[in-house]
Amino acid sequence: MSKMKIAIAGANGRMGHMLIEAVLKADDAVLTGALDVPDSPNLGNDAGMFLGEKTGVTVESDISRALEGAEYLIDFTRPEGTLKHLDYCVKNNIKIIIGTTGFDEAGKKTIAKAAETISVVFAPNMSVGVNVTMKLLEIAAKNFAEGYDIEVIEAHHRHKVDAPSGTALKMGEVIANAIGRDLKECGVFSREGITGERDPSTIGFSTIRGGDIVGDHTVLFAGTGERIEITHKSASRATYAQGSLRACRFLADKKNGLFDMQDVLGLK
Image (cartoon, rainbow, N blue to C red; front, side):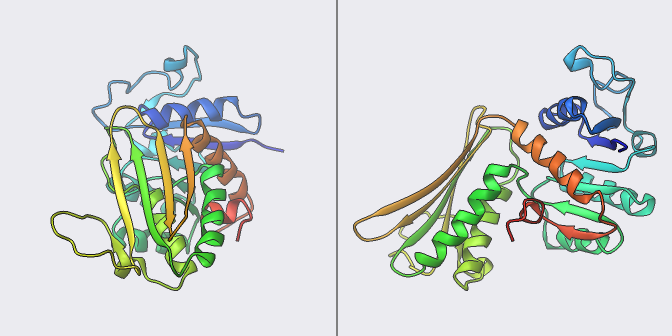
């Protein structure tokens, strides 16, 4: 069986390093390309330099060179960059795994349109644990739809540029769908001053940013006389990298289509 030919976008970032390391260690994958921004200090260097390894793959800013020979692109960058990479993948029949967060509705529609041509896994969090947690939240929400206030609390490192996190928003969507609500209408993303009593039909969000927190998410179901908390804490980005490889394996026989990690893990 031939190995999966994988290129990594954002090769010089924290997540990019984790993805490169995961691909290099995987028995069924080979690193074929490393893409980064034009002002990256690592352009022209070996993609494995941070590990002290020689991979023979050079970090490139030119997408045509970086993705030459690639069957898959794993992208955890920023929306504007990901959409440019997506366009190239559509034109060159390259499968894409998107872990980037912060897309607006137009961006999400562009991804859905691309999936008519190529296969795409698009998920705000590639962690297996987080996605199992999503399933637990769906079950919990159906039982706590009445008489319980629902709050989503998330914490990330100081460098994260979007809030709430894509994972927190996805958790809110899962809960809202489970209880027949629309998150766009019931989500509350800020509170300040005299807010009045809490509307029991809402789903609240709280955001914490600080230090090097990889990613913590808690959903609180607060009722009268009891509180139920479902929490996932990430200690390493390695979980996202391993989930991304599982997504690549899932797409191996998919010509096109839009999928998420619930599809990859068979949780739907």
